[in-house]
Length: 340
Ligand SMILES: *Cc1c(COP(=O)(O)O)cnc(C)c1O
Image (tube, rainbow, N blue to C red; front, side):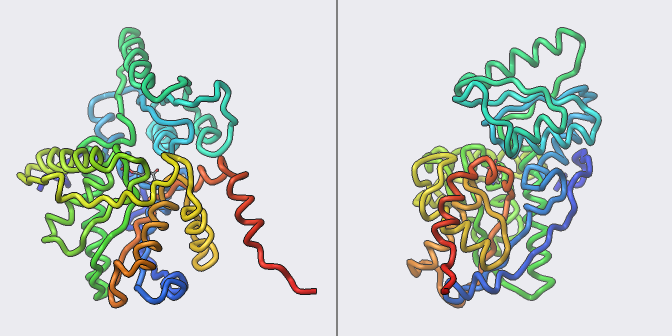
């Protein structure tokens, strides 16, 4: 496999910790839960994009790029981590963000984008983003700059390769502890790089665990196709031949709730439970939904009580502050009443 040969710009604190979530397990009736802390990758409040950016920025530098451009919603964790990674690498960073609000509040990830010195271009709709990105890339190229374009979520084969490495890292940690985990839960979307990398990694390891992608947007079929194709393209980048039929990609789409970025009651309950049992900070867009799925599957008896599962914490905490009002209402209503 050609993983070690890919250019890599070190950004992450690896390996990330693998922690026992004893009190959460107990609260849910005993299924053993380990948390793989990719929220602690170390750069700019952490998250899964930092692993991908090690390879993406490595590739950009190898190509002699002078600036990186990428796109996402206004509260994109990927854009925030890209802005910080670019700062570390001494590259300019240009972000195209979509927001229905022409002047979105400078909070959460968007505040941090500006803090890291990124140049932010706003568009109204998600479908306008890519054309604007291409337009800017061409403009910079015409001025003699060398732009490197990173697609949404950094989910190219180069980015996804980082999660092949993460799968190997996790498997080694499990072996070291003598633990057999049957499933790994992670938040997934039509970006799909984390899911694809983990699926390919698990396949290379001889399938020690199932990889369960919890959909955070209502696109299960599109996610299966995207993850399968990206896993195959990543295998090819690594000099391997692997086939992944979309039907073999596991997507649980029962926890999307009202839509992308909008937490359901179950999402908010999962955020509060993880916080109050383990001191974990989950987010309303991704990890809160992934945890809602894990909790829901345990409560529905879909996971046997003797099983050990891994929850991949992909980060996202800054988005929590951008949705402070929604969460504040829940936290206040669940505050224990002190008896006089
Ligand atoms: C981007 C992101 C994901 C999804 O990762 P992809 O590889 O883009 O599918 C999951 N969780 C968080 C917190 C993210 O920021």
